[in-house]
Length: 120
Image 1 (cartoon, helix red, strand yellow):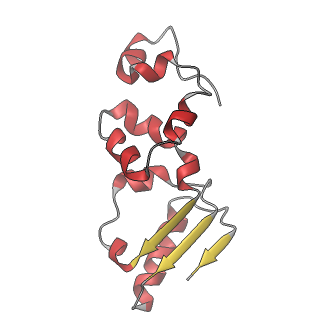
Image 2 (image 1 turned 180 degrees about the horizontal axis):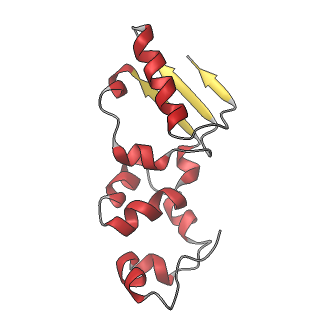
Image 3 (image 1 turned 135 degrees about the vertical axis):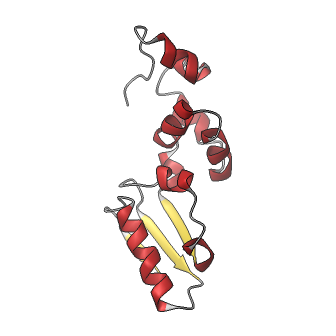
């Protein structure tokens, strides 16, 4: 992973605060102690964190579980956190086939193309 801090871009350094002054290999370790909900809350701090938090919390998103409840309420922060690093997807509690199909399509649309296991 490359360093986020660029001394020529002071505005970005100002926006990301403490993350810009830490070594880039330390930040994922810090995020590994957070829950997914904590990461989503961090993403709501500012635009820079909205972009950076998913990059540092990828380990938390290797397995995702989607339910029929998620069909209509998928959060934009969740969409930002998933991608080709997702390895396991569990689809639970789908009583309608069209909802399951819709959620499976969303997962693919989000770039989750390297899934190794699928649970239904």
